[in-house]
Length: 216
Image (cartoon, rainbow, N blue to C red; front, side):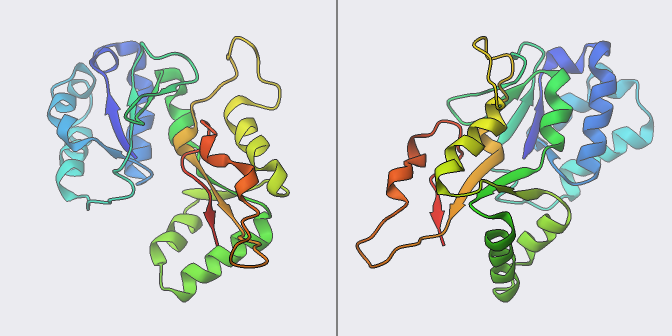
């Protein structure tokens, strides 16, 4: 995911220690800086107070990293005007407060499945058999994890618990805008070509889930 940093964060010394940690996360290749914003980052008060090596890393990060169509598809913006817990905009960009930034950036992507052991294992074996090494590498680096729902009927509850907690509060103080941090993968379980047992789940209308379920 691309990281965008608002000017109100880049110029406020209160948030500089958090930005230092964000840069360590970028160095670990979990996320990347939005390349179009690197000149503004280099000119910011935050980078002016950092070492030459740090500034050089930011400069090189914009030119040396390879383009990743999946990782660069979405943006997370760190903005001190954002509500705690974050929000997802119309363009599906996630905006978070600096105090929530480390939580969001360090949380692995969640692949919700009925059974973590069997469905997760099946996906990894398929990736290995098809030579999809990018997925295997991401899994071994803990970039994503399988989230055990415990059955089809619990898929939506699992997504809700991840984004809103088990006991959500009326004031939404426990909400976390993790819509772009999870997806659902389901077994087909069809008994014949006209059978669609997943239709009743209707996860397509669930605002907490990134995309419709994928039957395998």
